[in-house]
Amino acid sequence: MFPKIVIKNFTSRYHSLTKLPTINQLFHNVANKSIKDKDIIPELNCHIQSIKTLKNVTFLDLFDGTSSHPLKLVIDNNMSTHKDILNELKMGQAISLSKWTVVETPKRTQQFELSQNSDSRIEILGKVQEDYPLQSKQKLTVPYLRSIPLLKYKSNYFASLIRFRSLLQSQLIEILTSQDFIMCNPPILTSNDTEGNNETFKTIPKNLNLTVSTQLHLEILAQSLKNVFTISPCFRAEMSDTGRHLAEFWMLELESTNLYKLEDLLDCVKYLIINTAESLLSYKNIDSILPNDNLLPSNTLNKDQIKERWSHVANPDNWKHITYTEAVDILKEHYQNPPTWGESLSSEQEKFLAESYFNKDKGAFVLISQYPTSIKPFYMKQCPANDKVVDCFDMIFPGGMGEVAGGSIREVNIDTLQKAIGPDKTTDLDWYVDLRRLGSLPRGGFGIGMERLIAYLFGLQNVKDAIPFFRVMKDKISF
Image 1 (cartoon, one colour):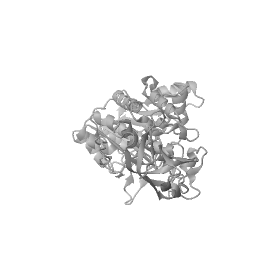
Image 2 (image 1 turned 90 degrees about the vertical axis):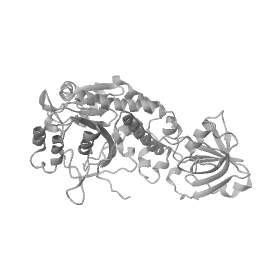
Image 3 (image 1 turned 180 degrees about the vertical axis):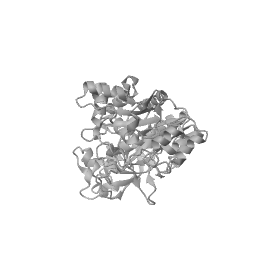
Image 4 (image 1 turned 45 degrees about the horizontal axis):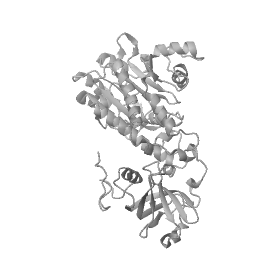
C-alpha cells in the first residue's frame, strides 16, 4: 500500500510517486482535513468538462479521470489576470492551474471549489479543434462514444469503466492472495492449443500460437506452489462477432492442488464471485469510481442500479447448480427447441436457464456441471461414477453474458489422458503427460472471462466496451 497523503505547507509532495495532485486526491484530502479552507493548491493539470459563463463569474467543471465527481473552478470575470484567456476557454481543453484557493462549500453537494486570488493563474496546455466531438450538450450514446476511441475515455462514463476495471482486478487479487494463492505470469507464446478447437492465432515460427488459455502452464506451477493464479491476455481466432466475443481478451485463471473434488471447485468459483461483489459493495470510495448519474449516456445503469446488481450477485440464494443431464431434462420439458443429450447447449438455451427458468425477474447464476466427455477438452477428468461425463462446469450469467467462467478437475490417469489426447497430438503434449510421472498431485482449476464479468457487473450490453481497445476478428485494427 502507498503511504497516506500528507501535505505540509504545500511544499512536500502530494503523493509518493507523483509531484502533482489528482482531483481524487484533492477530494480525499479536503475530506480528511489535510487540506483546509483558504489553503492554496500550488499546481493542477486537468481538462475542461463544461463551461458556464454568467455576467460576472465563469464556472468550469474540471476532470482528470481519477474521479467521477468534477472539480468546480470559479473565475471572477472582472479580474484583469484572466480577461484575455476567458474567451479562449473551450470544452475539452487541457489546462494548468497554479495557486488557486480552496473554498469549502459544506452546504453544497460538492465539499469545496477552487476560487482565484491575486496570484492565481490559468494556462491552456492543449487546444481542441472547433468540431471537438464531446462538446455536444445532448446525451451521448455508448455506440457513439465507442466510435471515437481517441476520446471516449475523456467521457465520465468510460473513465469510470476503466477505474472500475482496475478496482475489480485489485479486489480479485486481494481476495485470492489473502487465501494463499500466488500470482504468476505464464507465457503468452505456446506450442499447444489448450482447448483443441484450432482457433489459435499462429505466429512465426509456425509451431507457436498466441495462447487461448494459460491453464496447462499453471498446472506445472501448481505442482510446486499449490495455489496459483494469473490475470493475463488470451487470444481466440473465432469468427463470432457478437456482443459477447473478442479476439483478444483477459482471463483470470486459477489452478490448485487443493481443488481436486468437483464440489470444492464449484464452491471456490461461486464464493470468489460472491466475495468480490461484497467487497465492491463495501468499498469506501465507490461513488468516486462509478459514473456520475448526471453524465450518463442513454440506456445505461446508474449507480444505484449497478449496486443493486452487485447485491443480486452477493446473495447465495440467486446461485443454482444443476448437472448437464438435469439441464437437458429441464429444456425438454420447458423449452421449445431442446437439445439432444450429448450436444452442446446453445447460447439461447443457456439464456433460458439463467433468465427464465430459475428467476424470471432478475435472473440467476447457474453452475452447470458434468458435461458429456465427447464435447469437452482432453484434460478434464472422467467422472468416477460415469465415464460418459467429465467433472467440469460452466458458469452461466444472466443479462446476455452467457458463460462467464468454466473449469474442471484435471485428468491425472496417464492412460486415460493419452487416449483423450490422441496419437496425432501426443508429441506436442508429451511434457504435459510427463507431468503426471513426477510426483503429480490431483488438482482442478477454472478461468473467468474478465470482460464478460466486467460487463455484467457494470451493466454493459457489449463486451467490446469492457476492454480499453477492443479487438475482434471482423474489425480493422488501425492503431
